[in-house]
Image (cartoon, rainbow, N blue to C red; front, side, top):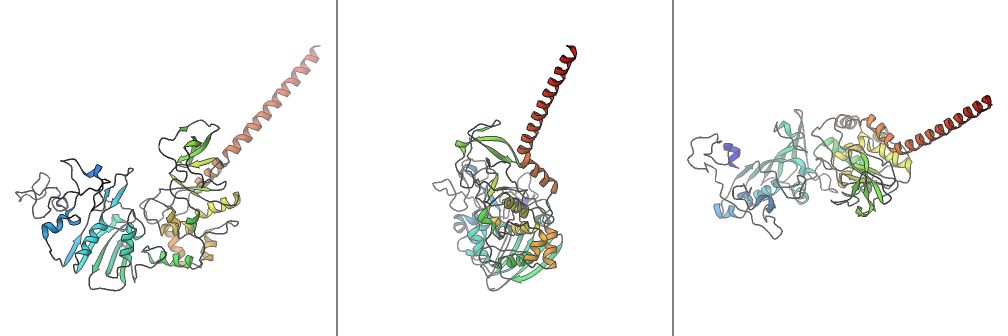
Length: 448
């Protein structure tokens, strides 16, 4: 536990400390000085911290936590613990830019288990259930650990920490060295709780933990159909491999692509030489934002509005993923409307608990026959969802904004509409010219 957690100050006798009895900066918390051990790539061998961010400055806190570094044993020796309780640091910047960070709490849990106490209880972000950068092995280890006796999950982290928003919620767990069985799982949202007793590895195919029972039942009904899944149509991030420094212009040139950059708008052009990948460039495709999300757990949209490009020459920046190919325009439109169903987005939410919607996020969504139009009612019936399951989807997933759908539909046809308008104006202009010529001709006759 850090001193700032107890004393509201990095030093027990500092000017901001809420305790005034200490003469030294340590107080009653043993926190030995610790340094990172940098590897040849500038990463700490123990916690993965980035040297550029956490090394080299004398007056800057290094965030080198003794518990997960080599000097813990040096300081405490082979000390035994009956109980380990903590609210470990959640993450550190990994220096990759754009707020990218690496998880820390998994390393604290690994270390705690290594010390083999009787009990462990920690409060940590819940994104490890189905995602989280660098947490695949940690998740696999956790969901197969039969010693996890209980998990208490707050779907909205603000119910536990009122001033902190954490995508995916927050949970605390009880690990019991002498327990070997199913886990008691309690989920809480808006002060209403639901408890079940089951295994954590309820979906062995994906190595994920779907915490909500109703959503788990929906996923299992869909999987029983053994259909191909939508993730096979979704590109990886940055589908056209556009790098920084690409030449982008406001004017169209013969050697350029129309570019979707952000907010569903395509009004600039990129030189074709700066487009390094075209294997996801289909005639019939859909773009979807890579990042989208809010902290709301009810009436949530889950994904951004999908986009059908207004031109076959249009491509997208790394802001979007590309989805396809589809056989023709009709199937593209039907897939577009399928993505807007609550059913589709509920299944995405089963694998997406942060703002990032990767290719993997669509792994539970089944591919439909896109020669047909799909609605929620048709999908509920196809997968035999009961009243409770339908009510869950209707409550958790909001209907998409139809005005935005209309605007996007108009945008797709805008270049056609402009062409038609231009033709009409040309026709009217020619007719007016002919009419004027006729008037002038008759005037000349009358004069003569």
